[in-house]
Amino acid sequence: MTTPTHVVSAGVDLFADAVAAQAVDVTRVDWRPPLPGTEADLAAVVGDPRRHAANERAVAAMLGVTARLVDVAPASEVLGLQRGQFLHAGPPITWDRASGPMRGALMGGAALEGLVTDPEDAVALFESGSGVELEPCHHRRTVGPMAGVVTPSMWMFVLEDTTTGARTHCSLNEGLGKVLRYGAYGPDVLTRLGWMRDVLGPLLQSAVRSVRDSTGPVDVTGILTQMLQMGDEAHNRNRAGTLMMLRDLAPAMVASGRDSTDVAEALRFIGSNDHFFLNLAMPACKLALDAARDIDGSTMVVAMARNGTDFGIQVSGTGNEWFTGPAQVADGLYLGDFGPEDANPDIGDSAITETAGIGGFAMATAPAIVRLVGGSVPDALATTRRMHEITLEENPRWTVPVLEFQGVPTGIDVTLVCRTGILPQINTGMAGAKAGVGQVGAGLVNPPLEIFPKALTRLAERARVARVD
Image (cartoon, rainbow, N blue to C red):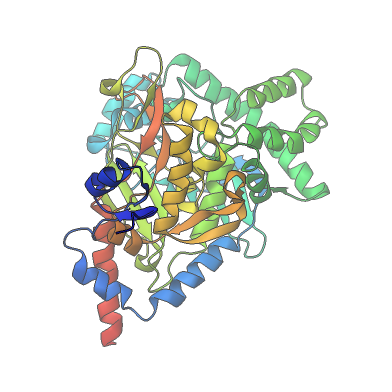
Protein backbone atom coordinates (compact mmCIF):
# COMPACT_ATOMS: atom_id res chain seq x y z
CA MET A 1 0.00 0.00 0.00
CA THR A 2 1.35 3.44 -0.94
CA THR A 3 1.46 6.09 1.76
CA PRO A 4 -0.45 9.19 0.57
CA THR A 5 1.64 12.31 0.02
CA HIS A 6 -1.21 14.66 0.86
CA VAL A 7 -4.55 14.29 2.63
CA VAL A 8 -7.55 16.62 2.66
CA SER A 9 -9.52 16.38 5.92
CA ALA A 10 -13.01 17.84 6.34
CA GLY A 11 -14.69 18.27 9.70
CA VAL A 12 -13.25 17.26 13.06
CA ASP A 13 -9.50 17.43 13.62
CA LEU A 14 -9.00 13.97 15.14
CA PHE A 15 -8.28 12.30 11.80
CA ALA A 16 -6.17 15.20 10.54
CA ASP A 17 -4.08 15.21 13.72
CA ALA A 18 -3.44 11.46 13.38
CA VAL A 19 -2.31 11.82 9.77
CA ALA A 20 -0.13 14.83 10.53
CA ALA A 21 1.55 12.85 13.32
CA GLN A 22 2.72 10.44 10.61
CA ALA A 23 4.47 13.26 8.72
CA VAL A 24 1.85 13.46 5.96
CA ASP A 25 0.82 16.89 4.68
CA VAL A 26 -2.79 17.71 5.60
CA THR A 27 -5.16 20.38 4.27
CA ARG A 28 -7.87 21.03 6.84
CA VAL A 29 -11.24 22.09 5.45
CA ASP A 30 -13.45 23.95 7.92
CA TRP A 31 -16.61 22.06 6.99
CA ARG A 32 -19.64 21.52 9.18
CA PRO A 33 -23.25 20.56 8.50
CA PRO A 34 -25.94 23.24 8.04
CA LEU A 35 -27.20 24.93 11.19
CA PRO A 36 -29.71 22.69 12.99
CA GLY A 37 -33.32 23.28 12.02
CA THR A 38 -32.52 25.18 8.82
CA GLU A 39 -32.84 22.32 6.35
CA ALA A 40 -36.39 23.00 5.14
CA ASP A 41 -35.88 26.75 4.91
CA LEU A 42 -32.59 26.27 3.08
CA ALA A 43 -34.30 24.01 0.56
CA ALA A 44 -37.02 26.59 -0.02
CA VAL A 45 -34.63 29.51 -0.43
CA VAL A 46 -31.94 27.74 -2.43
CA GLY A 47 -34.68 26.42 -4.71
CA ASP A 48 -36.18 29.89 -5.25
CA PRO A 49 -35.78 30.52 -9.00
CA ARG A 50 -35.44 34.26 -8.35
CA ARG A 51 -32.43 33.93 -6.04
CA HIS A 52 -29.52 33.75 -8.46
CA ALA A 53 -30.59 36.69 -10.62
CA ALA A 54 -31.66 38.70 -7.57
CA ASN A 55 -28.25 38.26 -5.93
CA GLU A 56 -26.51 39.18 -9.16
CA ARG A 57 -28.57 42.39 -9.25
CA ALA A 58 -27.81 43.16 -5.62
CA VAL A 59 -24.07 42.68 -6.02
CA ALA A 60 -23.97 44.68 -9.27
CA ALA A 61 -25.90 47.53 -7.67
CA MET A 62 -23.56 47.60 -4.70
CA LEU A 63 -20.39 47.50 -6.80
CA GLY A 64 -21.74 50.17 -9.15
CA VAL A 65 -21.82 52.92 -6.51
CA THR A 66 -19.13 55.60 -6.31
CA ALA A 67 -19.39 57.65 -3.12
CA ARG A 68 -18.24 61.27 -3.20
CA LEU A 69 -18.15 63.83 -0.40
CA VAL A 70 -20.46 66.63 -1.50
CA ASP A 71 -21.22 68.57 1.68
CA VAL A 72 -20.91 68.98 5.44
CA ALA A 73 -23.98 70.40 7.21
CA PRO A 74 -25.93 70.23 10.49
CA ALA A 75 -28.19 67.24 11.06
CA SER A 76 -31.13 69.59 11.46
CA GLU A 77 -30.70 70.59 7.81
CA VAL A 78 -29.79 67.36 6.05
CA LEU A 79 -31.73 64.88 8.20
CA GLY A 80 -34.58 67.09 9.37
CA LEU A 81 -33.85 66.36 13.04
CA GLN A 82 -35.85 68.51 15.45
CA ARG A 83 -35.17 69.45 19.05
CA GLY A 84 -35.57 66.38 21.25
CA GLN A 85 -35.00 63.89 18.42
CA PHE A 86 -32.00 61.56 18.72
CA LEU A 87 -30.59 59.03 16.29
CA HIS A 88 -28.67 56.03 17.61
CA ALA A 89 -26.71 53.06 16.32
CA GLY A 90 -28.16 49.62 15.72
CA PRO A 91 -31.72 48.33 15.51
CA PRO A 92 -34.54 50.14 17.39
CA ILE A 93 -34.24 50.34 21.17
CA THR A 94 -35.91 52.14 24.06
CA TRP A 95 -34.26 53.83 27.04
CA ASP A 96 -35.24 51.05 29.47
CA ARG A 97 -33.22 48.51 27.42
CA ALA A 98 -30.36 50.82 26.48
CA SER A 99 -26.84 49.86 27.55
CA GLY A 100 -24.50 52.02 29.62
CA PRO A 101 -22.60 53.61 26.70
CA MET A 102 -25.82 54.24 24.78
CA ARG A 103 -27.31 55.96 27.81
CA GLY A 104 -24.15 57.98 28.38
CA ALA A 105 -24.10 59.21 24.78
CA LEU A 106 -27.79 60.15 24.92
CA MET A 107 -27.24 61.99 28.19
CA GLY A 108 -24.33 63.94 26.71
CA GLY A 109 -26.33 64.64 23.56
CA ALA A 110 -29.20 66.05 25.63
CA ALA A 111 -26.80 68.42 27.39
CA LEU A 112 -25.22 69.46 24.07
CA GLU A 113 -28.67 70.42 22.77
CA GLY A 114 -29.54 72.40 25.91
CA LEU A 115 -32.35 70.06 26.95
CA VAL A 116 -30.64 69.76 30.35
CA THR A 117 -27.83 71.64 32.04
CA ASP A 118 -26.23 68.61 33.65
CA PRO A 119 -26.06 65.34 31.66
CA GLU A 120 -27.09 63.46 34.81
CA ASP A 121 -30.42 65.29 34.71
CA ALA A 122 -31.15 63.70 31.34
CA VAL A 123 -31.89 60.34 32.99
CA ALA A 124 -35.26 61.58 34.24
CA LEU A 125 -35.95 63.14 30.85
CA PHE A 126 -35.43 59.86 28.97
CA GLU A 127 -37.22 57.82 31.62
CA SER A 128 -40.31 59.98 31.23
CA GLY A 129 -40.07 59.98 27.43
CA SER A 130 -41.52 63.46 27.41
CA GLY A 131 -40.27 65.54 24.49
CA VAL A 132 -37.66 63.03 23.33
CA GLU A 133 -37.67 60.49 20.49
CA LEU A 134 -35.16 57.72 19.69
CA GLU A 135 -34.70 56.38 16.16
CA PRO A 136 -32.02 54.24 14.48
CA CYS A 137 -29.51 56.06 12.29
CA HIS A 138 -30.15 53.54 9.52
CA HIS A 139 -33.77 54.67 9.28
CA ARG A 140 -32.57 58.08 8.04
CA ARG A 141 -29.88 56.90 5.62
CA THR A 142 -27.26 57.52 8.29
CA VAL A 143 -24.67 55.51 10.20
CA GLY A 144 -23.12 56.26 13.57
CA PRO A 145 -20.01 54.66 15.11
CA MET A 146 -20.32 53.00 18.55
CA ALA A 147 -23.36 54.56 20.33
CA GLY A 148 -23.96 56.48 17.11
CA VAL A 149 -25.92 59.27 18.79
CA VAL A 150 -26.77 62.15 16.45
CA THR A 151 -28.46 65.35 17.63
CA PRO A 152 -29.82 68.25 15.54
CA SER A 153 -26.79 70.55 15.98
CA MET A 154 -24.15 67.95 15.08
CA TRP A 155 -22.49 68.41 11.70
CA MET A 156 -22.72 65.57 9.21
CA PHE A 157 -20.67 64.36 6.27
CA VAL A 158 -22.93 64.09 3.20
CA LEU A 159 -21.95 61.48 0.59
CA GLU A 160 -23.60 61.10 -2.80
CA ASP A 161 -23.59 58.49 -5.55
CA THR A 162 -22.90 60.41 -8.74
CA THR A 163 -25.00 58.08 -10.88
CA THR A 164 -28.23 58.00 -8.88
CA GLY A 165 -27.94 61.04 -6.62
CA ALA A 166 -28.64 58.87 -3.56
CA ARG A 167 -27.13 60.20 -0.33
CA THR A 168 -25.96 58.91 3.05
CA HIS A 169 -24.63 60.66 6.14
CA CYS A 170 -22.39 60.33 9.19
CA SER A 171 -21.33 62.59 12.04
CA LEU A 172 -17.76 63.91 12.44
CA ASN A 173 -15.28 61.71 14.33
CA GLU A 174 -14.31 62.84 17.83
CA GLY A 175 -11.25 60.61 18.24
CA LEU A 176 -10.68 57.78 20.73
CA GLY A 177 -10.89 57.39 24.50
CA LYS A 178 -13.32 59.50 26.50
CA VAL A 179 -15.66 60.59 23.71
CA LEU A 180 -19.44 60.73 23.35
CA ARG A 181 -19.73 57.75 21.02
CA TYR A 182 -18.10 55.55 23.68
CA GLY A 183 -20.59 56.79 26.26
CA ALA A 184 -18.50 59.52 27.94
CA TYR A 185 -20.18 62.85 28.69
CA GLY A 186 -17.85 64.85 30.96
CA PRO A 187 -17.14 68.57 30.54
CA ASP A 188 -14.17 67.89 28.23
CA VAL A 189 -16.41 65.81 25.95
CA LEU A 190 -19.02 68.54 25.71
CA THR A 191 -16.38 71.23 25.17
CA ARG A 192 -14.93 69.25 22.27
CA LEU A 193 -18.38 68.70 20.76
CA GLY A 194 -19.11 72.41 21.08
CA TRP A 195 -15.89 73.23 19.22
CA MET A 196 -16.75 70.70 16.51
CA ARG A 197 -20.19 72.33 16.16
CA ASP A 198 -19.00 75.95 16.18
CA VAL A 199 -15.61 75.74 14.45
CA LEU A 200 -14.77 72.41 12.80
CA GLY A 201 -18.12 71.82 11.10
CA PRO A 202 -18.38 75.24 9.39
CA LEU A 203 -14.70 75.09 8.38
CA LEU A 204 -15.11 71.66 6.79
CA GLN A 205 -18.28 72.81 5.04
CA SER A 206 -16.40 75.70 3.47
CA ALA A 207 -13.52 73.44 2.35
CA VAL A 208 -15.71 70.62 1.02
CA ARG A 209 -17.90 73.01 -0.97
CA SER A 210 -14.86 74.82 -2.35
CA VAL A 211 -13.25 71.58 -3.54
CA ARG A 212 -16.58 70.31 -4.89
CA ASP A 213 -17.17 73.45 -6.93
CA SER A 214 -13.61 73.82 -8.23
CA THR A 215 -12.13 70.39 -8.96
CA GLY A 216 -15.04 68.07 -8.14
CA PRO A 217 -16.07 66.28 -4.94
CA VAL A 218 -13.59 64.19 -2.96
CA ASP A 219 -13.82 60.59 -4.24
CA VAL A 220 -14.30 58.60 -1.02
CA THR A 221 -14.60 55.27 -2.82
CA GLY A 222 -11.32 56.02 -4.58
CA ILE A 223 -9.59 56.78 -1.28
CA LEU A 224 -10.88 53.47 0.09
CA THR A 225 -9.32 51.73 -2.92
CA GLN A 226 -5.94 53.34 -2.24
CA MET A 227 -5.90 52.97 1.53
CA LEU A 228 -6.47 49.22 1.32
CA GLN A 229 -3.18 49.09 -0.61
CA MET A 230 -1.48 51.10 2.14
CA GLY A 231 -2.18 48.99 5.22
CA ASP A 232 -5.64 50.22 6.27
CA GLU A 233 -8.73 48.02 6.50
CA ALA A 234 -11.08 51.02 6.96
CA HIS A 235 -12.68 50.05 10.25
CA ASN A 236 -10.13 50.19 13.07
CA ARG A 237 -7.21 51.33 10.92
CA ASN A 238 -7.79 54.50 8.86
CA ARG A 239 -4.43 56.25 9.05
CA ALA A 240 -3.73 56.41 5.31
CA GLY A 241 -7.33 57.31 4.54
CA THR A 242 -7.34 60.18 7.02
CA LEU A 243 -4.11 61.62 5.61
CA MET A 244 -5.37 61.35 2.01
CA MET A 245 -8.58 63.13 2.97
CA LEU A 246 -6.54 65.82 4.72
CA ARG A 247 -4.39 66.15 1.58
CA ASP A 248 -7.52 66.86 -0.47
CA LEU A 249 -9.13 69.31 1.94
CA ALA A 250 -6.23 71.10 3.69
CA PRO A 251 -5.49 73.65 0.93
CA ALA A 252 -9.13 74.73 0.85
CA MET A 253 -9.21 74.93 4.64
CA VAL A 254 -6.15 77.21 4.64
CA ALA A 255 -7.60 79.35 1.83
CA SER A 256 -11.02 79.60 3.49
CA GLY A 257 -10.31 83.02 4.99
CA ARG A 258 -11.23 81.77 8.44
CA ASP A 259 -9.20 82.56 11.55
CA SER A 260 -5.72 81.02 11.17
CA THR A 261 -5.77 79.74 14.74
CA ASP A 262 -9.01 77.85 14.06
CA VAL A 263 -7.59 76.40 10.84
CA ALA A 264 -4.41 75.28 12.58
CA GLU A 265 -6.36 73.65 15.39
CA ALA A 266 -8.63 71.86 12.93
CA LEU A 267 -5.67 70.55 10.93
CA ARG A 268 -3.98 69.44 14.15
CA PHE A 269 -7.15 67.71 15.37
CA ILE A 270 -7.74 65.78 12.15
CA GLY A 271 -4.06 64.95 11.62
CA SER A 272 -3.74 63.47 15.10
CA ASN A 273 -6.99 61.48 14.83
CA ASP A 274 -6.26 58.37 12.75
CA HIS A 275 -9.93 57.35 12.95
CA PHE A 276 -11.26 60.53 11.34
CA PHE A 277 -11.77 58.85 7.96
CA LEU A 278 -13.87 56.06 9.53
CA ASN A 279 -16.82 58.44 9.47
CA LEU A 280 -16.45 58.67 5.70
CA ALA A 281 -15.80 54.97 5.12
CA MET A 282 -19.01 54.05 6.94
CA PRO A 283 -21.47 56.16 4.90
CA ALA A 284 -19.60 55.14 1.71
CA CYS A 285 -20.31 51.51 2.56
CA LYS A 286 -23.92 52.28 3.46
CA LEU A 287 -24.40 54.15 0.19
CA ALA A 288 -23.22 51.08 -1.72
CA LEU A 289 -25.30 48.63 0.29
CA ASP A 290 -28.44 50.76 0.19
CA ALA A 291 -28.33 50.43 -3.60
CA ALA A 292 -28.77 46.67 -3.12
CA ARG A 293 -31.87 46.92 -0.91
CA ASP A 294 -35.38 45.69 -1.65
CA ILE A 295 -34.60 43.14 -4.37
CA ASP A 296 -37.13 40.31 -4.10
CA GLY A 297 -35.44 36.95 -3.75
CA SER A 298 -32.04 38.32 -2.79
CA THR A 299 -30.39 36.68 0.22
CA MET A 300 -27.66 39.33 0.57
CA VAL A 301 -27.18 41.11 3.90
CA VAL A 302 -27.35 44.90 3.47
CA ALA A 303 -26.78 46.00 7.08
CA MET A 304 -25.21 44.69 10.29
CA ALA A 305 -25.62 46.98 13.29
CA ARG A 306 -25.48 46.87 17.10
CA ASN A 307 -26.97 49.11 19.78
CA GLY A 308 -25.05 47.66 22.73
CA THR A 309 -27.93 45.39 23.65
CA ASP A 310 -29.05 43.81 20.36
CA PHE A 311 -27.22 42.84 17.20
CA GLY A 312 -29.36 43.19 14.08
CA ILE A 313 -29.12 42.47 10.37
CA GLN A 314 -31.22 43.54 7.41
CA VAL A 315 -31.44 41.56 4.16
CA SER A 316 -32.09 42.81 0.63
CA GLY A 317 -35.03 40.48 0.03
CA THR A 318 -36.86 41.22 3.30
CA GLY A 319 -37.17 45.01 3.23
CA ASN A 320 -36.50 47.03 6.38
CA GLU A 321 -37.18 44.20 8.85
CA TRP A 322 -34.53 43.68 11.53
CA PHE A 323 -33.47 40.20 12.65
CA THR A 324 -31.94 40.51 16.09
CA GLY A 325 -30.19 38.61 18.85
CA PRO A 326 -28.08 39.51 21.87
CA ALA A 327 -24.93 41.54 21.16
CA GLN A 328 -21.72 39.75 22.16
CA VAL A 329 -18.71 41.01 24.13
CA ALA A 330 -15.63 41.27 21.91
CA ASP A 331 -12.52 39.21 22.56
CA GLY A 332 -9.51 41.49 22.38
CA LEU A 333 -7.01 43.79 24.04
CA TYR A 334 -7.82 46.19 26.88
CA LEU A 335 -6.56 49.65 27.76
CA GLY A 336 -4.80 50.19 31.09
CA ASP A 337 -6.36 48.24 33.95
CA PHE A 338 -9.61 47.49 32.12
CA GLY A 339 -10.65 43.88 31.58
CA PRO A 340 -13.53 41.81 30.18
CA GLU A 341 -15.73 42.64 33.16
CA ASP A 342 -15.56 46.34 32.19
CA ALA A 343 -16.64 45.91 28.56
CA ASN A 344 -20.10 46.45 27.17
CA PRO A 345 -21.45 44.08 24.53
CA ASP A 346 -20.71 45.07 20.94
CA ILE A 347 -22.12 48.42 19.82
CA GLY A 348 -22.21 50.62 16.72
CA ASP A 349 -23.16 50.92 13.04
CA SER A 350 -19.51 50.55 12.01
CA ALA A 351 -20.05 46.89 11.08
CA ILE A 352 -21.43 48.36 7.85
CA THR A 353 -17.77 48.20 6.75
CA GLU A 354 -17.68 44.41 7.18
CA THR A 355 -21.07 44.16 5.47
CA ALA A 356 -19.47 45.80 2.43
CA GLY A 357 -16.37 43.56 2.57
CA ILE A 358 -13.76 45.66 4.38
CA GLY A 359 -12.97 46.02 8.09
CA GLY A 360 -12.71 42.54 9.57
CA PHE A 361 -13.26 41.00 6.13
CA ALA A 362 -10.14 42.75 4.82
CA MET A 363 -7.81 42.10 7.75
CA ALA A 364 -5.32 40.46 5.39
CA THR A 365 -4.65 43.86 3.83
CA ALA A 366 -3.89 45.40 7.25
CA PRO A 367 -1.98 42.78 9.28
CA ALA A 368 -0.80 45.47 11.71
CA ILE A 369 -4.40 45.68 12.96
CA VAL A 370 -3.74 42.64 15.15
CA ARG A 371 -1.70 44.87 17.47
CA LEU A 372 -4.91 46.75 18.26
CA VAL A 373 -7.59 44.05 18.21
CA GLY A 374 -5.58 40.92 19.07
CA GLY A 375 -4.83 37.72 17.20
CA SER A 376 -1.88 37.15 14.88
CA VAL A 377 -0.89 37.97 11.32
CA PRO A 378 -1.71 34.41 10.14
CA ASP A 379 -5.12 34.84 11.81
CA ALA A 380 -5.70 38.02 9.78
CA LEU A 381 -4.88 36.25 6.53
CA ALA A 382 -7.03 33.26 7.43
CA THR A 383 -9.97 35.50 8.33
CA THR A 384 -10.10 37.14 4.91
CA ARG A 385 -9.86 33.76 3.20
CA ARG A 386 -12.63 32.35 5.41
CA MET A 387 -15.01 35.23 4.67
CA HIS A 388 -14.95 34.26 0.98
CA GLU A 389 -16.88 31.13 2.00
CA ILE A 390 -19.96 33.13 3.05
CA THR A 391 -19.97 35.86 0.39
CA LEU A 392 -21.34 36.12 -3.13
CA GLU A 393 -18.54 37.93 -4.91
CA GLU A 394 -15.12 39.61 -4.78
CA ASN A 395 -14.86 43.39 -5.07
CA PRO A 396 -12.54 44.21 -7.98
CA ARG A 397 -12.03 47.76 -6.68
CA TRP A 398 -10.89 46.79 -3.20
CA THR A 399 -8.07 44.26 -3.38
CA VAL A 400 -5.59 42.59 -1.02
CA PRO A 401 -1.94 42.82 -2.15
CA VAL A 402 -0.68 39.95 0.00
CA LEU A 403 -3.32 37.64 -1.54
CA GLU A 404 -2.16 38.43 -5.09
CA PHE A 405 -4.60 41.36 -5.28
CA GLN A 406 -7.64 39.18 -4.80
CA GLY A 407 -10.78 41.26 -4.32
CA VAL A 408 -12.16 41.49 -0.79
CA PRO A 409 -15.06 39.12 0.00
CA THR A 410 -18.27 41.01 -0.67
CA GLY A 411 -21.99 40.37 -0.23
CA ILE A 412 -22.74 38.22 2.83
CA ASP A 413 -25.21 35.50 1.83
CA VAL A 414 -27.66 34.35 4.51
CA THR A 415 -27.85 30.89 2.93
CA LEU A 416 -24.08 30.45 2.96
CA VAL A 417 -23.88 31.42 6.64
CA CYS A 418 -26.59 28.91 7.49
CA ARG A 419 -25.05 26.18 5.32
CA THR A 420 -21.49 26.57 6.68
CA GLY A 421 -22.01 27.88 10.20
CA ILE A 422 -19.26 30.43 9.51
CA LEU A 423 -20.10 33.81 11.03
CA PRO A 424 -18.98 37.22 9.76
CA GLN A 425 -15.84 38.51 11.48
CA ILE A 426 -15.96 42.05 12.85
CA ASN A 427 -13.14 44.03 14.43
CA THR A 428 -14.39 46.67 16.80
CA GLY A 429 -13.71 49.11 19.58
CA MET A 430 -15.03 48.27 23.05
CA ALA A 431 -16.98 50.74 25.17
CA GLY A 432 -17.14 50.62 28.95
CA ALA A 433 -20.27 48.98 30.31
CA LYS A 434 -20.98 51.96 32.57
CA ALA A 435 -22.16 55.30 31.24
CA GLY A 436 -19.39 57.90 31.28
CA VAL A 437 -16.40 55.53 31.14
CA GLY A 438 -15.50 55.76 27.45
CA GLN A 439 -13.33 53.33 25.51
CA VAL A 440 -11.88 50.30 27.33
CA GLY A 441 -10.29 48.36 24.45
CA ALA A 442 -10.67 46.86 20.99
CA GLY A 443 -11.15 43.32 19.73
CA LEU A 444 -12.84 40.79 17.50
CA VAL A 445 -16.49 39.75 17.63
CA ASN A 446 -19.11 37.80 15.68
CA PRO A 447 -22.87 38.28 15.33
CA PRO A 448 -25.11 35.98 17.41
CA LEU A 449 -25.70 32.77 15.46
CA GLU A 450 -29.50 32.78 15.69
CA ILE A 451 -30.12 35.92 13.64
CA PHE A 452 -29.23 34.24 10.33
CA PRO A 453 -31.74 31.38 10.68
CA LYS A 454 -34.35 34.02 11.58
CA ALA A 455 -33.63 35.87 8.35
CA LEU A 456 -33.59 32.57 6.44
CA THR A 457 -37.06 31.70 7.75
CA ARG A 458 -38.47 35.00 6.49
CA LEU A 459 -36.78 34.52 3.12
CA ALA A 460 -38.26 31.00 2.93
CA GLU A 461 -41.75 32.32 3.68
CA ARG A 462 -41.44 34.83 0.87
CA ALA A 463 -40.04 32.22 -1.50
CA ARG A 464 -43.00 29.89 -0.84
CA VAL A 465 -45.50 32.71 -1.39
CA ALA A 466 -43.78 33.72 -4.63
CA ARG A 467 -43.88 30.13 -5.85
CA VAL A 468 -47.65 29.91 -5.20
CA ASP A 469 -48.27 33.23 -6.95
